[in-house]
Length: 270
Image 1 (cartoon, rainbow, N blue to C red):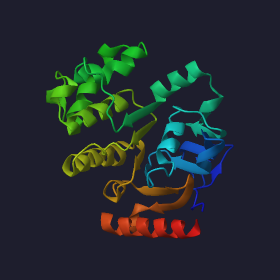
Image 2 (cartoon, rainbow, N blue to C red):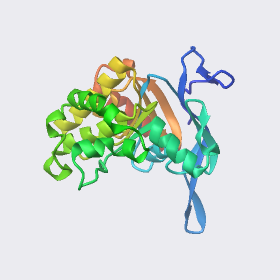
Image 3 (cartoon, helix red, strand yellow):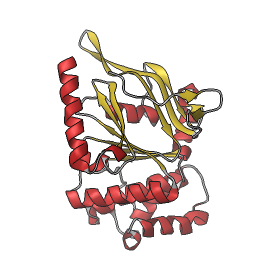
């Protein structure tokens, strides 16, 4: 079931083509207790994401895609295997060191936004920097420039409950990006949005990747979202079923057709 995985040179931290590696998972496995037995949410996954890539991780509900993202983010620990971010084996860290590393080097954006209701949009964006003890005053110009880029500059003084879903998601994106993370991880960021707002978020992510070279890993089950990425990794039953370039597809419909074909193939093999 394993797809075409990009091999890496462990000694120098570069992919076969010479590109630098942002994320590398090796033998990544996560098991949970289920009744008297165990359930493997993720099984022996080897995956490499190069610096500057935009990768969409697709799969049906229960395929392991959110588990993979949470493991890369260090939000849960694996049963076995390793995760390297920017060459650092994150699960060799203690809890405090891992928390600091995640706060400084990873931007994490969730479907549910996770904004703090009693803080303004600006305060929400700056909250991780304040929690890290950084000088917020020196980042205000950068934060406002980022907010202008995301078209939320006029909403910085508003509280989350007065913002639309699309605006809240863009505030969450700004929060994830303000610390200039090595990798932006987005878990179903369009799941709570209407189609237009969701496509606008995809457009912003695409622009951040292509114009600023941001490394992005996005989890989705929607071909119309995944097609914005440069590469699509499909998970099935906790394993990689396919690894494809979006340059193979003319549009979201073509990607959807291939995705359905993979799903049928995996269903027959099981």
